[in-house]
Image (cartoon, rainbow, N blue to C red; front, side, top):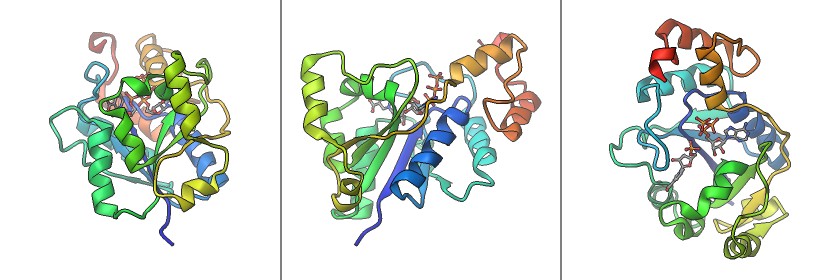
Length: 217
Ligand SMILES: Nc1ncnc2c1ncn2[C@@H]1O[C@H](COP(=O)(O)OP(=O)(O)OP(=O)(O)O)[C@@H](O)[C@H]1O
Ligand SMILES: O=C(O)c1ccc[n+]([C@@H]2O[C@H](COP(=O)([O-])O)[C@@H](O)[C@H]2O)c1
């Protein structure tokens, strides 16, 4: 039997506990031994981040240095074209073979925008979607047709993620963490403390590099 492989994509400008903690809890809940964090180079649906790709990658390395659950994948950092998840998952499927269960982890906000993603239909052909809770976002889709699409693919059994190669959406019962990278960038700009929101090593690097100062925003 092939082990479930999980990929967690993001912009991580900067990485924070709202990324790390739900995924660590998820891993315990559903029995994931490894989560591959995949920072993008050119985010498809948002402006280019404040921190460079090298700085975002370095912050991730600092954040996961003492967390063996996580590893980094740099494939999207190497691409100069928009980091379309559909394309990345197609590549990943080819590498892993047709039977390996694959999952892409997102937050609740990303589920709401998911139907606007490039070739979103093909994503479930290649992987499952695991959705972590995030405060402030509804769990229902805005449009009826997208809600129907969600319901067609939903599973309440985490075993499905392990036994099927792709095609299911699992709404994980992870706790809420009310943290966003936007909020951290704004707080840093205003000189407010962020110690509870991200690992200290990442915060020290941000300060050392002079990231997210007023002039950057
Ligand atoms: N607090 C959180 N709880 C659950 N999921 C989250 C949280 N923050 C981010 N995520 C998820 O992590 C992934 C990467 O998020 P991203 O790097 O855009 O962070 P962000 O905090 O949303 O950034 P920004 O505020 O700059 O938009 C997305 O799928 C997003 O939904
Ligand atoms: O493929 C797309 O069209 C697409 C649109 C929006 C987001 N994504 C991916 O979803 C992940 C979370 O995105 P973000 O912008 O919240 O960091 C990240 O891996 C993005 O590359 C992908």
